Every structure is written in structure tokens, then in C-alpha cells.
Length: 555
Image 1 (cartoon, rainbow, N blue to C red):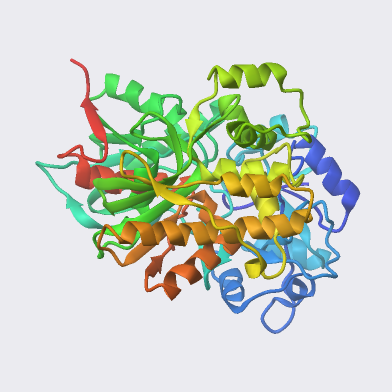
Image 2: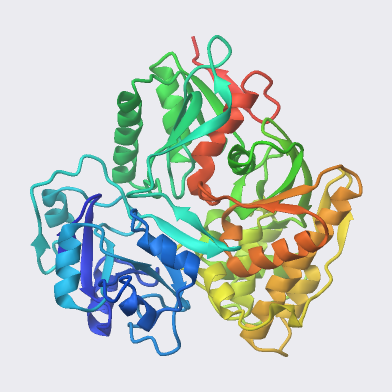
């Protein structure tokens, strides 16, 4: 059933019914990406049914029961009776409680957990009107339960995950956004004017900065479809009208292929605005510093998939030293070339082949024929250079046989984390960290790849060693950088640090060595936080251009 909520429609089915969930996945289509579960309230605090299926920690309890009623990622109990089709390959369930009277009545009368996933085609913004639902989901839903309360702006359900003792935002949405925060500086005339930041390509959000405030709007989604662009344009217009602010600076990512970047340059052609471009990982570091503004300088690890760097390569495993507007790259990883470019993000086997070929080794278990691909890779045809830790996670997921093809972003790394059971400190490989000719300390992952290619050890053991090795390498790199620079605070941000095992182990090692560790709290550390970081970087860097660059409307 498609059922209208507060921020959009959901698709509901029995969370214990394998056949219903299989049909939902086939029709949406959403073959593997986890589905959220709506639990009925029961017991003295409402969580009796949740506790039957999930192992709920106190901080997760508090977040589940908060007025926002977000989705909270919680570990399953061994005897969980929910369908394994809800989150295939993962040990966590996205749980939420009813947040509207209609949901209270429905799930209360049904008396059992229900899948409650956004009613849209996978990757697009949530649907908000009856005609769109009827047209788009005619072959998916058996029926539609509608009501006459209009939804003016779409808002997906927010998502949180417990990391390092706190539940941290994975996605902004209904009840948690728009979020308004105070900036560590003021955007005042005549030096600076209101800023509209348009975020990135994936997990898009937009933000409006004015005076000493910034407002970040809810998650829009991935910007690869016409409907996503339409919702994006509605949100950017509504945000300015809502606050009575006309943006005169448009902040965007440097990447020329991003839909938001192209939109920014088209906008400047028909307005008096200025475009200010911000490097992807500077925006990540700026977002974290915008939340924690009082320590300078600090070292910030920005580990994620790929984003344009100032040297024209695809960054993603960087250590940046400094402060907003003045970031210096002091750490990275050994670079490698991605065969097929962007396709590697959904085909982890490509990253696995890349790291093997970089070491002059074959990969006997590669699932695809790679003769022509390897020739193209050797000639650097559609094989861009990257330092992305996210692609290294993909390679490990493929080399262990855990995930060779991904139907959603991050599937390989998520399943690799879930496979790393037990005490990950049981094994590690010391990775070399050496300085290159530009003074950047680089982690060499070669030994790790050789280990993953060995026949000895199962996938679970290899996954555990992979996580421990990267955590130890991060510490080693930090100590090398501290030998040359004075800092005591280390930030961890970017999509890779949504990995609880890696993040908590890295933080433990850093704290043991005298560092203060900071993580995103209010703002998602993934690309959903880029718009906030773009406001911060633009606000402090528009006059010096040290972190990014700007270009005014052409005459």
C-alpha cells in the first residue's frame, strides 16, 4: 500500500513477509538497499516490540523516542523474525516509531512491524501528491491511502546511526530540517553577501547563509534525474522566499559534471550573482569546522568516495591541516587509476582489479573478462587517478568475495563492515607511511592488497584485519604529520567515517596518543553536509581565494 504521510508517501508491507518484500524490491526497483521498518508502540516506553527484534542501546532509545521520530540504525538480535530481505547482507535494521496519528492507528491496529520505505522510484525525491503516486507507482502499490492535507515541500525520513557514543546524522529529513545554525563569522555587506550553497551530486542538500546564520534544507537525493532537478529548483527558490533573502553568491562544487555545478553557472548567466566554487574535501573539512569552530589549526581526515581535488585528480583519502579557507593537504594514500572511471562506484570489482594491476598482479577471481579493459587502463583511457579510501573499501569487498557488484552507493563498504565480526584488534598489517616529493605523507596500501589475495583466512577475518590496518595507518600518518606541525585536535569526516568499526577504533587510537577527536554531530559527515561546508568555506574564503576560487557573471 502507498500511504500519505507528513513529508511524502510511503510504501508499506508486512516486515515479516518475504514474498511481499521481494515484490516491493522488484517493482520499485530496489534490489538490495536496506528498507526502513515502522514498529508499533507497546509497553511502558513504547519499545517492547523493537526490543524483541533489535538490540537497542540507551542513546538509540533516546533518539527513537525523540519528537522527530527518525529512522535509527540498530543491530538485529540473533533470533530476529523480520524478513532477511529487509537489509540483505547487513546486521542492522533502520527502525522508527509512528510519527503521525494515521501511522499510530495503522501500525497499532496491525500489531506488527511494517516496512515503510519512501514511495518513489529508487534514487529520486519522495513523491508528495496523489496523481504522481498513481502515475509512478501504478505497478507497485495495490492501493493508495490518501488524505487532504497538502504536502508543500518533500521531506524524506531522517536517518541516524550510533557512532562513538552518540547518534549522528546520516540523512537530514522530516522533523530535523530545515536546521538553523550559527556561523562562526558574519556574512555582512560590503565584503560578503547572502550565500546559496547548492551541495553536491549525491545525497544533495542546499543551504542559505546570511548574517551569522545558516539554514540547511532537508535531503533532496541524488541529482541524476529530471525530477531531482525540479525538486532542487523548488527548494532553492522556496528557501530564499521563506527567509526573505536573495542570494548574491552561489556556492557549488568544482566538479564540472555535477548537476548542481552546471545549474550554478547557468544561474549566473541570468542574474547578478557570483559563483564561488569550493573543492569537495575542503567543504567536508569546512562543515566539520563550522560545527566545532574554536580550535585552529586542526587536522581533518576527509575519507570518502571521489571528489575533485586542486591537482585535477579524484581525491578521497585526504588529511587536511589548517582552518576554513586555508586548508593544506598534508596526508593522502598511494594513488591508483580506476578502470572505467565513475562505473567503479557501482562495480567494486573494478577497484579490486585496479589495485591488483597497480602492483603488477593478476586477480584470478575477477568476475569479468578484462583484456580490453586492462589495455585501456594501461593506456590511461578513461582511467582517472584517485586517492579515494571509499574505492579501497570497494576493492576489499570484492577481493574478499563479499560484494562484486553494487546496486546502491556504499553497498560494498557497508557489507565489508558487517562482515568484520569480533575483536578487530586480532590482526593488523603495518603499512608504510612515507613523504612524497610534495611533502605529503602517503599511506601505501600494497601489503593490504597482497594480504587480501591470499587463500588463507575467511572473508570475516580479512574484513577485520582490513579495518584494524586502516585505523593503525591513520594513527601512524597522524603521528608523522604531528612531527612537523603543531596541532592537538583531529577531525574525522566524509562518508567512510559513517563506518562505526573504523571510526571508533581510529578514535580510540588517537585518544590514547593524546589527541582530541571530533566528529560531525548536527550535520551529516557524508555529502549531505557539503552545502553547509560550502557556506563556511565561501564565507571565510571569498576574499582570499586560498581554499577555492570564484568567478563573477560574465559581462
